[in-house]
Image (cartoon, rainbow, N blue to C red; front, top):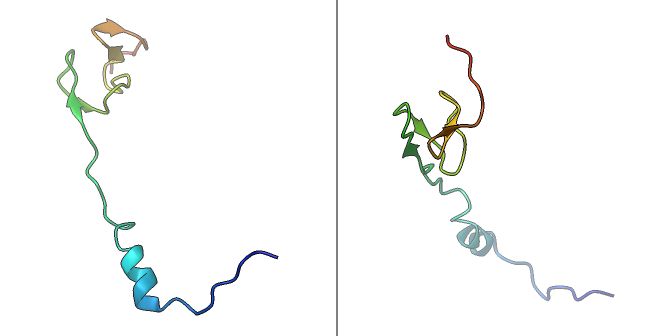
Length: 62
């Protein structure tokens, strides 16, 4: 049989422990070197399709 807690954990104790779960962190964005739009780091730019100075995904002109 697995161990069982001796007492019920108070609601305040469990809420204090989980207080950092809900903290939102802003997404880290970098500027694309080709088009200048913000993008996620280490990913292909969704606007121009470039990554590390070369075209990875061919994009159709809008």
